[in-house]
Image 1 (cartoon, one colour):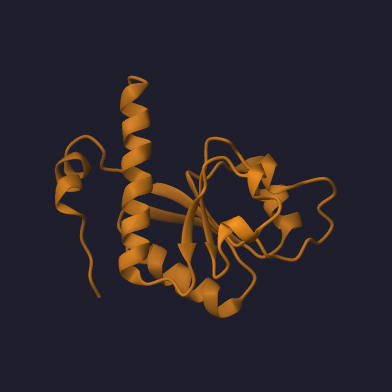
Image 2 (image 1 turned 90 degrees about the vertical axis):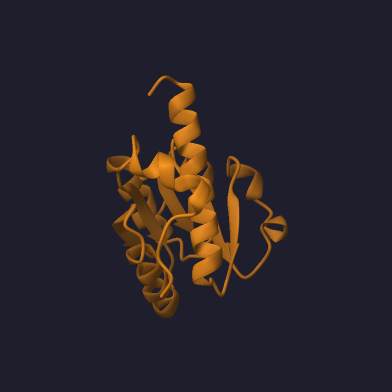
Length: 147
């Protein structure tokens, strides 16, 4: 398995920004959940905060934690979620839509603020590239705020 940080990111990562980024997997397919857990577990800079399998759970979890990265399958069972929708996800979270269907095919895609797309099946290389981009963006935002 390929592990490691991209060359342009190593300096930042090893100096001031050694930390774990909390993430949440939102998925209902057991095989995809296992794959995503393996991908998250392959990185030293990600910490899995949980896995939710339906909208009702997502509503409850995001009331108590604010993951920095949410890996989101847009097609999950609703459960008893009331009026909760993807537009109510924490604005501080970076959203990575994990789907075989292009985001442009979802009618409620406008509810997501600046999501990234990661197509299924997810390869380690594409996963790492996507996560590296998200982390670099978060670090640049943090640095821009004096953090």
